Structure formats: C-alpha cells, structure tokens
Length: 175
Figure 1: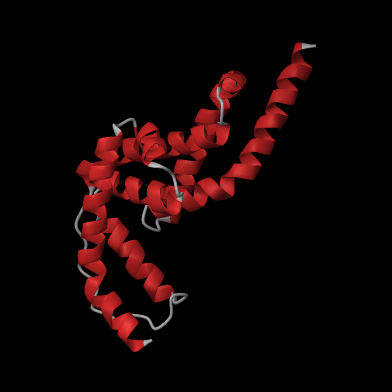
Figure 2: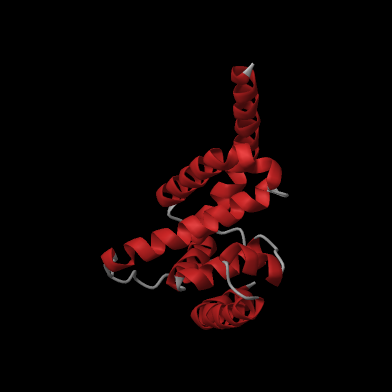
C-alpha cells in the first residue's frame, strides 16, 4: 500500500517536471546570459530540490511559482559560490548591429548586456520583464523587500539602456 502511494507521488512529480522543465530552462538561460550548460545544471538542481520537497507539495499553493523561486535562489547561490573564480575575458570586436528584431545578433547583444549586469539585477530583470511578475512576486522569489526590487529594477534598466543605447539607436534608424 505504501509503495503505490510513493509511486503515484513520483508519477505526479514526473508530470510536473515534464511540464515545467522547458519554462525553467528558458528562464535559467536568461539568468545565465545564454550559458546553456549552466542553465541545464540549474534546472537539474531545481528539480532535484523540488523532488525532495514533493511530499510536502500539498502545502505549497503554487508548485510552479515555488519551482521558479527555487531556480532563482539556486542561481544566486551559484553566483555567490563561484564569483571568486570568475576570470575576465578579452573583449569581443565591435560588430555591426542587426537589422531585424529576429536577428540572432540582436539576441546575442541583449544576452551580452544581461551578462554584464550583477546577478541580482539580472534576476530582477528576468523575473519582472521576462516572466512578467509583479514587484511583490519578484520580492518573494528573491527574499527581499518590494522597495529593493523597485530600486534594482530602475538601476538595472538604466544600465541596460546605457549599454544598448548606441547600437539600438542605429538599429532603429536603419529600419
């Protein structure tokens, strides 16, 4: 009898993981500025943490949102843990800006601009503007106050505008 209950809980988790893995991976790719290998690792870590909590998931109101919060916290923990091992890279040569919003070069420019943001600023941008979460939901996911989210949003967007201003102005003018 106990085995069948455990089996059904495992099946429930597998269904949840199958449904949410793609969404978690896309969010993780944005958080890691396009590092798909790290994104896969973060998703696996998130899903393994969710599996250990799955028996208690009946007390979690929204498992999908909780998984997203676990992903964000896993990313921030990774950034704290490995920030001392980061090494600067040589700068890439200047490239002309793309002519289409669907152009891969534009996506790469945006990912590069995201990569230059501090980890917590990047999390705020991804949650607020990619995930379309409210200030309060973002604050809950990050374990910070709503005022901190608003401040980080303002600063992060200003940094992105500064980094992308010249290239995007050229792009808009050429269209």
